[in-house]
Length: 161
Image 1 (tube, helix red, strand yellow):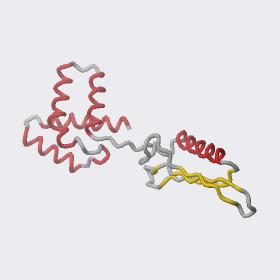
Image 2 (cartoon, helix red, strand yellow):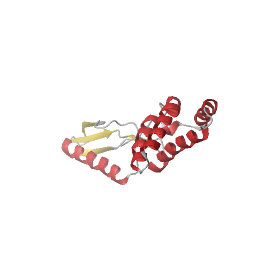
Image 3 (cartoon, one colour):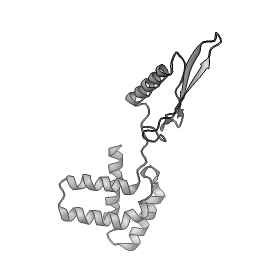
Image 4 (cartoon, helix red, strand yellow):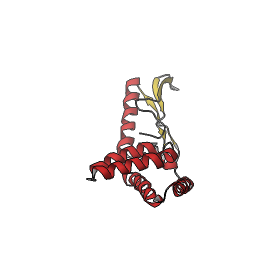
């Protein structure tokens, strides 16, 4: 859900403490990850619970509220390889002829994946695209066609967002 929180990982600590009047109370300090928009850590904290179960219940409710409010979106790191694989299934289901689909996938696999494959899509910048285009121009006469195919894959990432 959050930028650096792994699935199923619960990052919260529960502590028992004594108040000034001598009563036992429970608190929790959690960590939910990083807000991708602001870069701020999301750390819910609360004190004053009469039992550990009450503290756990409140923490779970707070996590659920954050997820439902969608204030914090997950930042899923996707490489160009993963995106291309996803796009291939979308492209195949769009009704394109099998020969066209095969040629498209072969050209992306041969020309784009070796250069852009391991790079995260949100980290691809103009320099990466220009480097790819320059290499294509040296190798092929129809470099514009492959550039447009790469553009289609990257546009898919934008519309999917």
